[in-house]
Image (cartoon, rainbow, N blue to C red):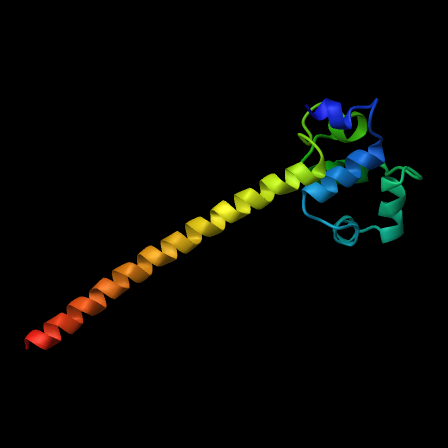
Length: 126
């Protein structure tokens, strides 16, 4: 499916870079800072005005969790679809994680409430 959206015939290097950056939840400024490049440099890469050197390509693929081959050609391990769909899946995972955390907190509070009720009942019997 990644080839349909980000293949060489339908997307440029800049398209894939921007898509992977967005899917990683980073804005241009954040990624530029992590890479140690100017914001204008990263923007030029995404606009297909310039291309990064090999060492920066390697850093990009690692930071964005895509293969170097996918970043350059759209083939191999990369994004499954448009960034908005990938972002929605990440949001869903984040919501599930938060629900689990809240549920665990509720269970802890329920146990605490039970202990307090027992103490209260023991105090009334005395």
